[in-house]
Length: 153
Image (cartoon, rainbow, N blue to C red; front, top):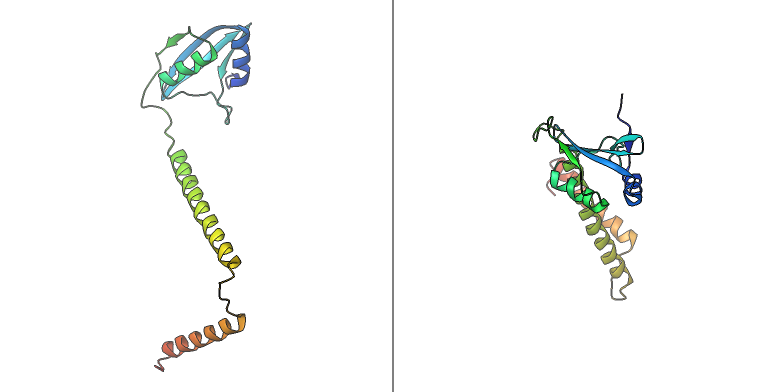
């Protein structure tokens, strides 16, 4: 059975209201999770996007998170903690690399479009008609076909 969870927003509201009775940091392979008690309920903190139990890779990050919420006292159960055991996320590293590449390409592309628009608006730009371009391309094509066919013209 999946653990019942609580999200950050609800935990922040409970902490602000002073309704959090206890916070338990629980070690597990790959990091630390957080179990909070409030009223008669006990819930695990959920990750924002996945809604799965949130795993903090570093204890320092979790301590800062709790202190920011105003929770300064908590207990730690490190019995099942394993630093190297958790899920690695090479997929996230690859996704971030692709996102950075896409952002860089987008920046380059927008600069190219801006340059082209500036050139098009410049009154000194010399324009070539479509017919002249078509004739030039036809000449190039004829030369390439001649080379392919062995007719060194």
